Image (tube, each protein chain N blue to C red):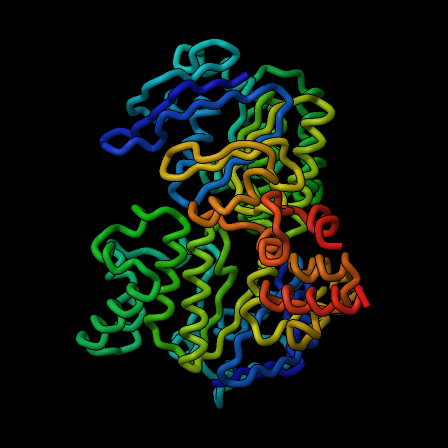
Length: 272
Length: 272
């Protein structure tokens, strides 16, 4: 669905590429996690996968970046916006500031799609429901906590019903309950609607539990990809500054296996 | 310096009773973590300690000062505060000026200010960026800058709201090192955090809040072994504790080392 072939990208006025010769193929219905230390290129890769690079951020690129076989740069931005949604790391970059209530904020994007009113309302209710913020519908988006703003930003993209959803650290300000709500909602959308979810995240245990595939970045390069267990249990994660779950760390000291556990279930099985 | 809250209640103008008869005694030099789901009253409680909020009932003492009799500006010389969102506290043109702002306002001499600035920036690893603009730093580093600005105030008490949010492995390790240093210097440290793995490993004492009341209070091992009460407060134990519980080890290991020791003993007993 989205394909990168030896794709490199330079932000305007920079000499070091933010992404370097990345080759990657993401299929429809996949739940993909992106890990990397801060500055490894996670956000830039999110922008590339959602068309913000090159459409919004200028700069130079090399190699290929295609969406459904078409060159991403040649696609019409309006059309692309109907198919791919990006949730920014900082909800402040997302919330319009032009609307007085959360309900109106979520309607903001939908108004540009020319939908009937009843359809808009249905989509807003569903989006509020998915991230569990029905009770905020009539509040101002600016009178709520950082974690709640993060949920609003996610809801406003979910309401657009994109086929591909790219999220840049969407749970950074959420408590464990909020994180669970977001991962559960995304997982439900992947299984019931076959949408594609790509998510950059530091919370390794959650990625390991929910993702089909994990991609590890370091210094703008693709360093590893595979199942969560293959990627997240490897010692390379320590060198890349990504770290490992404590399940892996404990098991590494106790077991002689290359396939260390990365989730509670796996650790229980390996150590019982 | 110690802190003492006695029978403190606080109600927001919206009518929400955020604190309901809270009493808490924090001895000088303690490293304490406050846990609880969003809305449990954690942030309200710590805002009483630096005078940003005043109790409707009860009293709050910082050392020998009753906060009711001192302005927030005076209290700032005793309690340093790291906000959850660093952008709430950054407003200067360079990193060095940002860090200098606090000590200068507390009346430190220029030589003393310069000394504190270089020491604090070094402590958080930003010494080479002293002349950069704070907003040229990525968000996780802005948090470290805000931490440096808080440290430079040289207050006997520091309150840190979600210090590890958005930090990668390296950032978490830096914060861990800084906390250990400050603790060794005898500072009283209070952190609010959802990062259970981090709290279990660093705090001497855990306080769990629920609905504006103190729900659990004790050493990490005591608090984290109370599965049912933690569940009520929607606080999930750290990974290693959950793994020990899943294996029915009857132990509350807080670090990988502790887990490894406990596990070996448990295996031995099991094999007998």
